[in-house]
Length: 240
Image 1: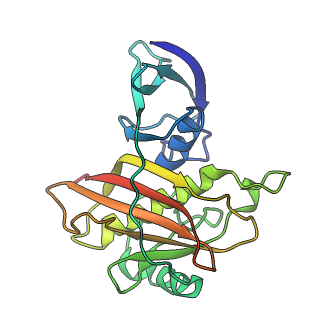
Image 2: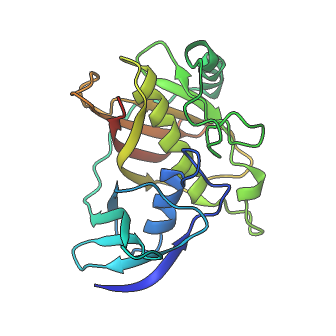
Image 3: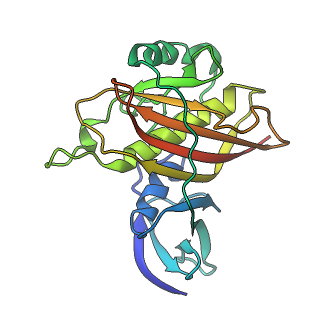
């Protein structure tokens, strides 16, 4: 296998304190690959480190080879996209769901996550219960993610969909602290920098209960007219 490209996750783009946010890192990794893939998280993502993309023909590895023993951080494999659908949620309803976030999250498990943390400059992806089994939040692309051309960095959407799914997994049934084990995203159409979207998360057609420490989820982003602009599928492992 041969290393041909690198990914570097900046210090601010953390999820769990001290390591890179999974959705953001997965985007930075997979945007360099020329086909649909699903990513599996293998180790915490080191920050401010040159991570090598290694081509293994039937898979790609994101590797921290800065130490004596190389560590595989993330693995990507070709995947025929299969994403679940759900009904769109009006932005007003998603905003109301976000207002319920603090009712069930007494102590934020990843308070410095750039996507869903409590700091004022996070993206505030705080999905709360809709009341129909799904979770949702309103969300607007941050100004810093808008290029001079007006296009929005898709990495922020990958990060936001990841965190939206996390809140569903962690708090909709049998509250537990999970980590992303596998993640895939389909961008249906580019984001508009001046639009507020609804992020919705749910079971994705899988059983809603935990299977031991394992659980699946899906999330989607909807424009105000109900158009789905992106979808994700994810698999999670509980820490306890």
